[in-house]
Image 1 (cartoon, rainbow, N blue to C red):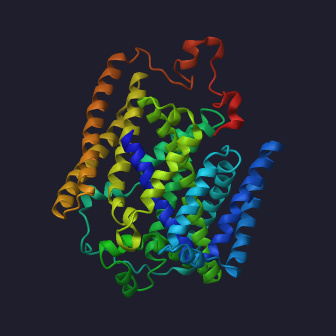
Image 2: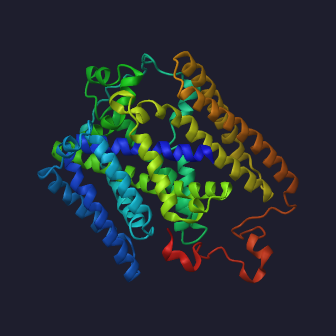
Image 3: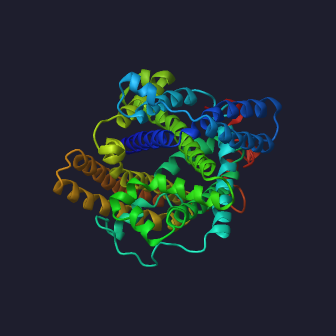
Length: 467
């Protein structure tokens, strides 16, 4: 629970900083992003009232959103004056506060009103962005400036184990497991849809990861000199990652005869849209965690009062995002973000442990979950130990205790997973159970033969009021 809470807090604090930086760097993106909110609400209400398909309204929403890029480019919005009037040193922090106010409100709105319709729009944006990257590569890219074999930049961590706690999206990620279990599952119409949504989500993530690699290499570096300026060392490469992706996608769009200023706003809108959705979802997930903690410690105000739970879920990451220090990137992004990889993959290990136990208890072979589980836990604990040594050596006495705590949680997870798997193996049924009811004995059929079906809406009577 503590690991999940810290992970959600860290992700939302960093995403707020990233969005704030993008708004400051790309003021033309403000109007499209802000007006996407009432646009998504209008689409959600229309779909709900008319019970119509989401396809055409969401496509119309994307068209309107991209038309607003022209408006945003003509009327860029900057909060520099407001920040100066408030005595705030960095304009980004004003955006951070506004973003968390927005997420508090958005998380209290039913999913079908804002979150779902905006995700419909974003799903189209994903395919459009991948199309722009692909066509931009075909039309305008004839070389990749990145060297075939690159010397390891100064200050870079070792390939093992750090690659496997760095690559998350498109591979395996604890945050994605929280989203899939906390919000995605509640939006499924039928249980069998989970396989299609899960597989296609993984394909989409992997495709976007490939596009991101292309954007951050060939998109931004036209020559070896450009490459060396962008990636001279590990710290510089890490600090400019989001900007490099935005500029790379913009260059691909420019290859398709889209003016570079509009292309840059387009790329920023895509990134901000997905990051803002992540923040919305994160508030809901963290509210669940806060309520669970309230139940455990017996505080009814946390477990039963949505307003209090939501406020706690917003104020803590807001405070983390505004922590001073850490240079231009801020303390959270510049310092605490170093703990994200291990925390995220430890949560992924927890998800794989649950899957392995669930499969074992149904008498099926858990090897498909156990192999990545063991590999992930080995890499994560290895990285935690290496980081702990480095933090102590560099006198980073905030990160060192936190890293040690995460290591203890990792060891605890390994022990608990082993105990649960052994218990599940002892309890496994003689006949394998399959919840789909196809080819094996259905779980529902065993409980009530008259109700054996897997095509039952997961939300029941409250499906339209999911929050």
